Length: 391
Image 1 (cartoon, rainbow, N blue to C red):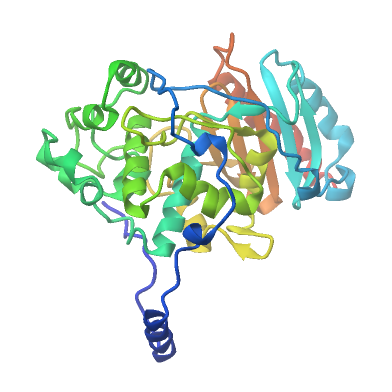
Image 2 (cartoon, rainbow, N blue to C red; image 1 turned 120 degrees about the vertical axis):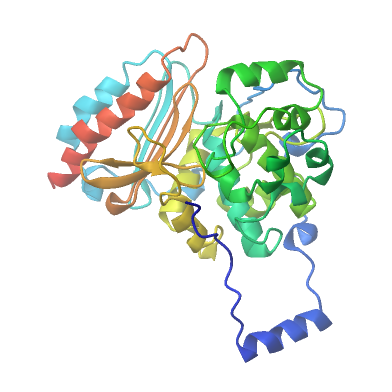
C-alpha cells in the first residue's frame, strides 16, 4: 500500500491571502539568485574533464578552518563515563582503514580522533551518505515550491528522457518511489553501475532497464535511481544540485564540498561521489538531530526531517525500515537513523540520547564494508549506551 504523500499544507488564512497579494505586487527574487557568495570549485563545470566512470573520486584537503563553529566538551561533562567508553575507543583505533571517529552529545564534540595518517582537514569520499543529503534537498525544494509533493511524477521534470523510456510504467514513477527505493527497475547495484562506466548518457541507460515490479511495490537499493532524482531536482530548481545544495543546505552549516562527481550530460551525481570532511558530516547529523534547525534558522523543514527519518517502506531485513534515503534501526531500546556509504562511511543519529556519531574509512585495500558498519553498532551497544546509562 502506498503511503500518504508528503506536501506542504494547502490551508490559507485571510491574513496569508493578503500577504500573498502583497508579494505578487512586490515579488521577491529567489535567495540563491541574490547571494553573492562564490560557489566552491566543486560546482564549476567549465573546462572540467568528465571522468569516464560511474563512481568517481577527486578528494582534496579541506581548506576551511571550522574550529570556531564547534563546541567542545569532556565526556563526563556530557554524561558519558570515560572509564566504560575507553575500551570501545581503543577497539575503534585498531582498524587499519579507519580515518576518523567523531562522537557528539548535546551538540558538543566529546571525542574526536584521526587514524592511519588522516587529518581533521582531510576531505573524505562519503559515498552513499550523500543520499541522505540529497533527501534533505528534496525537502527544501518542496518547502520552497520548486517541487510540489512526494507524489510528483519524475517524468514531469525529465520529459525528454521518459518520452523514449521503453516501459510505459515508468511514467508513473514518483518522488516517493525514488526516495524509498521502490522504483521497480531491474537495477543490480554493482553490476549496473559498472555498465554505466561505458555509458554516454546515464539517465537514458538507467531508464532503459526493464521493470521487474510496479513502482512503489518492492525495495531495491539503487544508486542509479538516486542519480535520476538528482537530474529531476536540477530541472525543478533551475540550478545544479551542487549549487542548490551550497546555497540552501551547506553554506548555513559552514560546509564546502571539495569534490562532486559529474555525469556525461552535465548533471552532478546523485547520492555518490561527494567529498567533505568528517566534521562537516557531523554537522549535517547535528542539523537533523536539531530537527533541521541551525543557528536559529530552519534549514531543512522540520516536517521533512520527521518524515524522512520515519519508516516509509519495509525492507525485510535486520533494519527497522527505510525512510527517505535514511536507514532506520533500533539498538538497545533506542531508535536510531543512519546515513551509510560504501567502504565504511557512517553517520548515526540517536535522538533520545542526543548523540551523533561519525566514522569514515579509506577505500584502498578496504574490502570490509559491512564489517565496519557492524563494528559501529557493537560500539554503540556494548560501550556507548552503557557509558551513558551509567551516569
